[in-house]
Amino acid sequence: MSTAWDAGRYQDKHSFVWRYGAGLLELLAPRPGERILDLGCGTGQLTSQIAESGAHVVGLDKSASMLEEARKNFPHIEFVLADAASFQVPGSFDAVFSNAALHWVKDFAGAAHCISRALGPGDRFVAEFGGKGNIAAVQAALRMVFGPSADERSPWYYPSIGEYANILEQHGLEVREARLFDRPTELDGTNGIEDWLRMFCPVYLGDLPADRAAETIRQLATLLRPTHFRDGVWTMDYRRLRVVAVKTAN
Image (cartoon, rainbow, N blue to C red; front, side, top):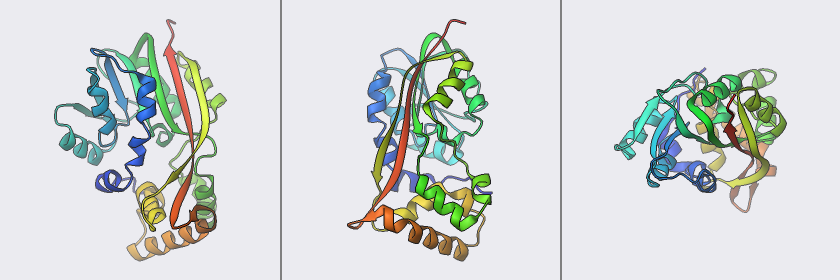
């Protein structure tokens, strides 16, 4: 199944992904001289904003196409190709930051282990990603179209607060703040849902012939229209989980 990312489409039509990260950056509060890892950095916009604070930031992503775009956008920043569930970086970081990325990491225990290993005692982990109930209507529509295989093919992991806090604490990360909240998110244009499906559902659509993929997108859009399209605007039923944790001494 294809999981390739279209970095150009992501940057042009889905900028809300990183624009919503502004509030998370305030929570991170990067300081000059800190060493910060941006985990799942995408095309680098938030990585660059962290760098503007005077911190030394490294962007890490699994997608070569995303990193190619990031390096074009911000050639002065270091970007590393690696998997969030298995990365290893030299030295330690003062903070690991992640926006809208960790719900793509199904090996959540592996990611927690790597994040903990990248931090020293007292250092912080600040993240936001899709939480329990995120895009519930989209997942229901995918089940209607793809049947029982929809859940098997799903690339997403949307945990509850309790589930994720337990994982972090098992890996030496003490949760200081955690919040699950709704964030209805408007998409650009009257074809916004079609663009969203092409961008974020490659494991469902990537291996289909072009005509069948287009028909599948039309089917999904028809199912979602009654609840997600109003006054010419598509709105996604996003739910976000925001977490702040600190590496313990043990």
